[in-house]
Image 1 (cartoon, rainbow, N blue to C red):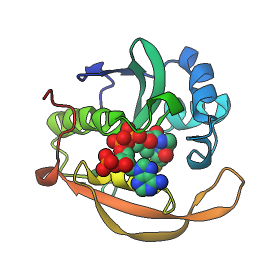
Image 2: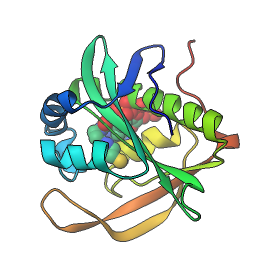
Image 3: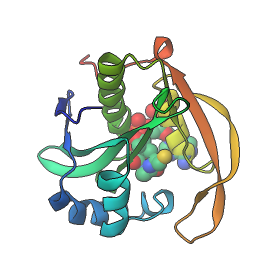
Length: 176
Ligand SMILES: CC(C)(COP(=O)(O)OP(=O)(O)OC[C@H]1O[C@@H](n2cnc3c(N)ncnc32)[C@H](O)[C@@H]1OP(=O)(O)O)[C@@H](O)C(=O)NCCC(=O)NCCS
């Protein structure tokens, strides 16, 4: 997946740079994100966003400020049969429909570039806000994957695997 810059009505995405990690680490340790991101240290973010193989990550900018990060990574078999997604925004940017807008840009870009037919995302099963936000894009719950994610406190927790077929995609990055 190419990490080109992407623009929506309210958000701008640019490939994650090393220099973004400090601010992203601060944002992802705010109360609204901290429970849902396993390792928000700069080293952890470098591993997840920059060094992870077959992963493309973008820094999200809103109103000229770093607001969060989003990743798309090859998943399935053969590798890249479908694409997984991950996202986190800082507290100031949550609950405003911006997460679905960001994900819409990435889904439209990857589907257009690669002809990918399926996307997946797996929030913690207790992350009801994320599940609701992803449903707005057309994601459907597949089921609970047991003890499939390490929580920030080091314990295992369940996730809600969700998937989206491109024909069901409801693009949330369109101007009214
Ligand atoms: C998850 C996230 C990307 C969603 O993006 P967002 O822009 O905040 O989401 P939206 O504002 O579009 O939608 C949130 C929805 O959840 C609902 N919601 C909020 N809190 C909720 C709760 N506790 N229980 C159920 N629904 C809730 C809102 O009412 C809204 O639904 P509506 O539009 O039908 O009213 C963003 O909140 C975020 O980055 N959170 C912190 C990190 C995180 O959880 N990342 C996900 C890891 S998989």
